[in-house]
Length: 473
Ligand SMILES: [Zn+2]
Image (tube, rainbow, N blue to C red; front, top):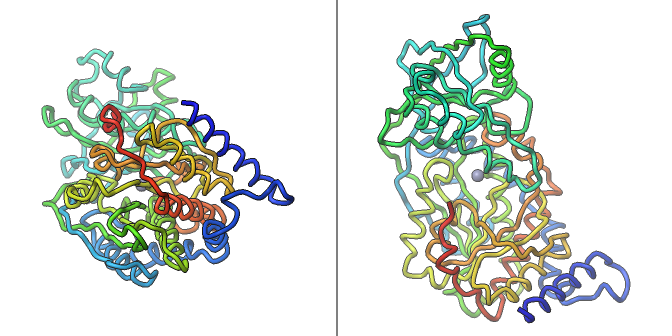
C-alpha cells in the first residue's frame, strides 16, 4: 500500500512537471529519450487522419458479411504492410450476416406522418405488408415489466429512456439495455414489435442502430430505433393521453454466416519478441454510415501508434501487436476467435489496450491487472502524462474486443477518450470522415503510442487479472 502511494506521488509529480514545460522543474524521466521522441513524432507527422480517410473512402461501411467488410480486410492487410508492420496476416472466422433491407415507419393515428427509423442489428423483419398497431410506452425495462401483459399484448412497445451526455460515455451503458434485450422483454408480454428512442445524444433525424439479442425462449419480434425527434413526438402525444398507432415495414433478415477475418500485424520486440503488448480496434462497422468514428478512428489510432514505434531506431523489448478485430458490432466473433487461436500464448500477452471511442482526446488511464503491479502500471500511464493524461486508481473495463482476453487473465488498460460528442454520431448515417478531428485523433494516437512503448519496454510484467475481476456483467 505504501509502495503504491509513493508511485502515485511520482506519477502526480510527473504530470505536474509536464504541465510546466519550461524551466528546470520541467525535467522528468518522461521528457527525454525515446518516449519524448515518439510522442513528438506522432504529433508532428501523424498519418492517422489519412488512414481514416483511406479506409472510409475506399471500403465505406463494413458490416460483417457485407462486401465492404471484405474490402476493409484487404485494405487492412495492405495498409499494415505499407505502415511497416511485420508478419501481417489474416485470421479467418465465421461472422453473422444480417441485412437491413427496406424500412419504413409512420404514425397513422392521430394523424399521418412519417417516422425516421432504422432496424436494430439482428432484428427479424415484419411481414411483407408490414404491421400496424397501437403504441404503449415504457421508460425502461423495469417499467415495462411492471405493465399488465393484457395492456401490452398485440401492441408496439416503445422504450423512451433518454441517454445522458457525459465525457466518459457512461450514459451509453445506462441507456443501451433496452436496445439489447427490450425486444424479448416485450415479446414475453405478447408485444407485436419494439421501438426504442435512439441511444444517442443528438437531436437530428438520423436514427442510431445497434445490436439486439433475442431470448430464444420467446418469439422474435421486429425492433427498430427511432430518430430522437421522432421518438419525442411519440412521447409527447402519449403524454397527452392520445391513442397512437404506427405502421412499420422492415425487410431485415439474417442469412447464413459469412467469412470474416481479424487482421494482425506486429512491431517485433528487440529482446523478448514472444511477449506481446496488444493494441486493438475493430475493423467492422454498422451499415448506415461509413464507420469513421466507430471504429475507423480506433483503427487509425492503433495503426499510427504501431507505425511510429516501428520507425524508432530501437524497438522496445517486447512485440507491439496491432489486431484489427472482426465483428465487434454484432457478435464479437473476431475477439472470440483471436483468444481461441492464441490460447497457448495468452500468458505471454502482457497487456491489451483497445481504441473504440472515436477520435476524442485521451484524458485518463486506468488499469486492470494484478494489484501488485500497480506501480508498473503507473509508469506506463506516466508515459502519456505530458499529453495531459492522468492516471486513475479505478479498474479498467477493457474494450469489448478484450472481453475474452481479460476472461483469460490478460491485463487491460483503458486510455479513456473524451466521448462528449461521440454519441451524436455513433451508429448513424452521420458517422463519416467529416466528423473526425485531426488534432484530437493525433493526441490519442500519441497517447496510445507512448503507453504501448512503455508497456513493451517495461522491465517487469503486469501479472494476471484476479479471477474475481475477469468477467464483466
Ligand atoms: Zn466500436
